[in-house]
Length: 277
Ligand SMILES: Nc1ncnc2c1ncn2[C@@H]1O[C@H](COP(=O)(O)OP(=O)(O)OP(=O)(O)O)[C@@H](O)[C@H]1O
Ligand SMILES: [Mg+2]
Image (cartoon, rainbow, N blue to C red):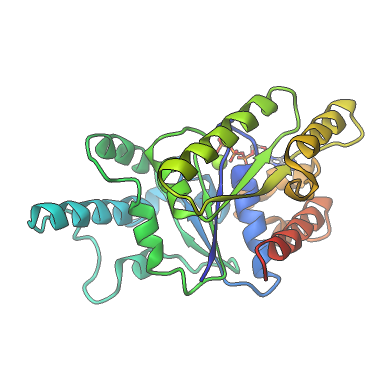
């Protein structure tokens, strides 16, 4: 059964997408079977894999929409499948997963996903749609990484309900600590009300320059508040990590010898050790 890791932080630009894609590739290079779920309507994980969202016929949006229709049909006993975009025979999730040039698989996203937030808002019992979806493939992978949006809407709640691990990337600045405190209180709420299985895998300092007092102080504060074993190996500032998505490449394909690649490899090894393998 896969370790399902949600990458979340309410603070925008904290490195969720960069970590999702490069950690996925790092894990795949350690021989793991990895699926990335792009659960952000900005579709930046999808774009980072060199896939243009507007060219996609199907994506996470259609899959979740089908799950929504199925759960309503189960309660109303009326079958009302609005999305007949899939060919008959193939499972819908299998037909959506992209096995591209990367070493990992991808359920892509497109901007339509933002509409799903609105569609879900009027419905009850819609926090487990992603969990139900991933049940269909969780035996096929060792790791499933979910790239979440910076907002705390129903898509993020779905991601936190589907996952058994929470990974929080943060930029080590003073203001980020507030976002981190918010994420831990969200974790407690999700544990209490929706998913007791969700555990904190750890916090990854991103764009981390330990030569500065600020970064050192923030990292030390994380260590004191969360303990040594929740502080994951940091990822240093590396412009190559910002360049790679424009070529649709991970850091390992774009600049295998840069410090970003070595940091993400170390992070992947640490995640493998922590997820109990
Ligand atoms: N270690 C790094 N060194 C340099 N630049 C980085 C590093 N990590 C991320 N970046 C850059 O920082 C920006 C924000 O990163 P990213 O898109 O991964 O954050 P995010 O949390 O997914 O953002 P959002 O909340 O909008 O989804 C991007 O331009 C990315 O290329
Ligand atoms: Mg992102």
